[in-house]
Image 1 (cartoon, rainbow, N blue to C red):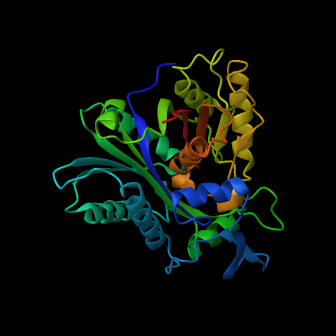
Image 2: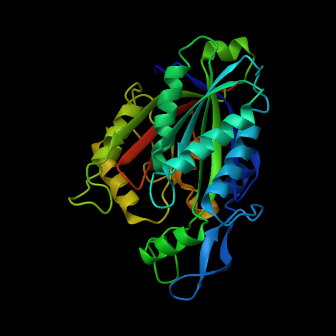
Length: 347
């Protein structure tokens, strides 16, 4: 195995099952779910929306909720970071895809908010990647490149929320939400995740704990995403898997566990099935075993990759991992597909 020149030395999470990373991971492992009736909104059938909602947040609009989630997770992931005002910190933000409920102006506001929060603590260089559920994989690719600079520290943070009145109504009318009448819908949720990365050399120099090493990251475009013309046969996800695993001899070192953003939407399951057919036999030790926490914290969108990577880290820290290697993957509503191969490190 030839890992990349980057490792994870810190993590943070804010989800509906835990306001900090360890609590979120423990709740998912215990199977605790916070999917419940919306306090006042009903769907087109007259039943309350079933949502995973952070009830500590005051606003009922998407942007302020994402902003609050992002602020919380940035505070956690940087709590032990050795920053001084002259430090340069690369921040890569995984954000929702552009659309009616997330605009370029929203993206710029979040970048400005993060920059303001870091003012006086370091010199942040912030890049936003509004690419949806798999945005975290592209953010990790950028972070790996940035970590090649001596002494570099990077944060990959993702945040998203479906808890917005107009957005819930639109998703409901499109038949995408989980309900008593829709078996194949998903539970809308919200959350944020963050990873602190650096090179192994810098981690040792700064005496930071290496929680996991990045083996490889793959991002690819699906030519026929859900809702488009043509037949999807999982080409994009297959290419993302192959890129993430390209530095790993899976005949000797197979993936021990998979973490993904399955949420009830059928296209994700179909793409995974097609992608498995293209993998080398035995590449995944047990293809039918995976962790898909949407039934606990709901669909978390652009926060998926850093949050799922955090679950891998927790499994190593608490010593319940099935083995040292894990594969994290996610599919955006649009064409982006992404995968990350991780190796747990015992300190």
